[in-house]
Length: 175
Image 1 (tube, rainbow, N blue to C red):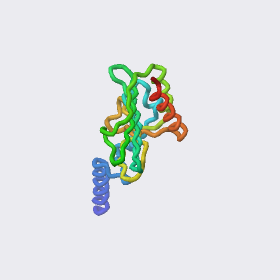
Image 2: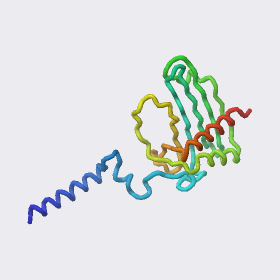
Image 3: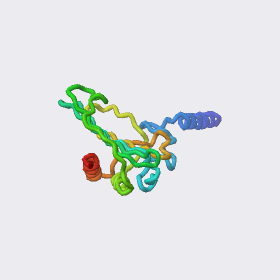
């Protein structure tokens, strides 16, 4: 009977160590499995006033390489939109390769339109992506309460992503 008791104590200790060290398998930490630590939904868990920045970036090493970034932000209470395109015949393209860029202040209506496009999207804990050759887009939403971790964004559908890109093109073409 004492062997069983020692076995139970060892099992409890092993589970406790795994809990403290985050050993759950599948690359997840035990803390990620606790209520409230899963994906966040924009509009439900993340309100419009909580958003501080949003990045949409695609980059490709094709010949010729491509790079386009759209950045939405809040600075001193003002909503802003920034875009940049990089062009060149080498990889990677750097800030020296920016050929088109611009910044504009957004109206409250334009900010609401931006929010409507990201609404119902999911924000998850950042993950390391080791796949190669992908052009993105890489999407990150920074918000009050992201804890520096919950920032990787996904649109609710391909159609929502496409509509968002069309919106960004309209914004960058406004004079």
